[in-house]
Length: 135
Image 1 (cartoon, rainbow, N blue to C red):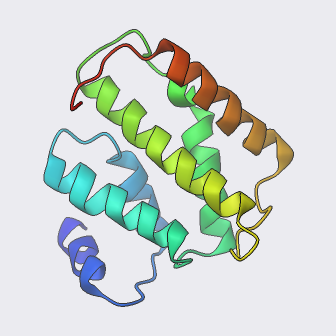
Image 2 (image 1 turned 180 degrees about the horizontal axis):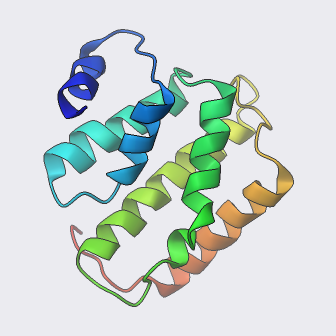
């Protein structure tokens, strides 16, 4: 899967199947910067920003990221949990940005419940995160 997804980064307009999206989400906080930064974050952020994802995939990402405590997950732990939280927060911003961009195919695509969860968790995260690894 890793090699297939790496090849897609070089494609002009890659498309992703559900299994690939799930793999990317499963590796959001991967300890390897090559996987986490260069593959997972790049693929998800680009997919949202360049509208390479379907509406269903956009919603799936939002639902998965908010379904398991989201940014609250292991908020008092340092190390690997910090990587997952920080990269999750970065994807939150991409989702919210697309949701408010009138030119985006994802404009107002998030239901109010998911949008509120993303915003509330983001505010909580900013006030509670103490680990500044990487800064």
